[in-house]
Image (spheres, rainbow, N blue to C red):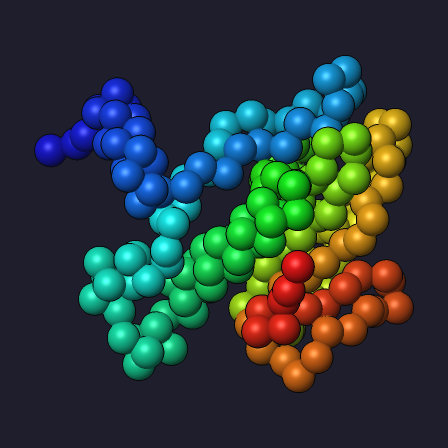
Length: 178
């Protein structure tokens, strides 16, 4: 049968209390911002290997299912971003506004410093990710917020980080550091 919304919420609450699930809250940049943001939090497993194990995934099966592999990669990158943000006195959030503009993560500090982040397994998605980051920057600056200190696309593999001609930092996950 189906699980009721209330039952699901109690399960998620229990999983969060035992640190199995981590909630990523919605970013709210300013108390009186004219940008209408969706305010629901997102739930991620504290360790994406738990999801892989629960699915019975192997490297071979994941290579045949890039959608699932991409979701697990995103969860892994969000875990690392959360650790680095916490270590630097910042928070990790997600951004999704009423116009359906979204980015995977926003790292933000008290006082208005913020960094929008897109997470893409493939380097073929860098331009699309950059479009989203730049659109969020324009929307937030037009609403009176400070521009981000950086815009970042995290990718699955690469030899080194670099900055595109559009001012977006492209960072392979294995070279990501605080």
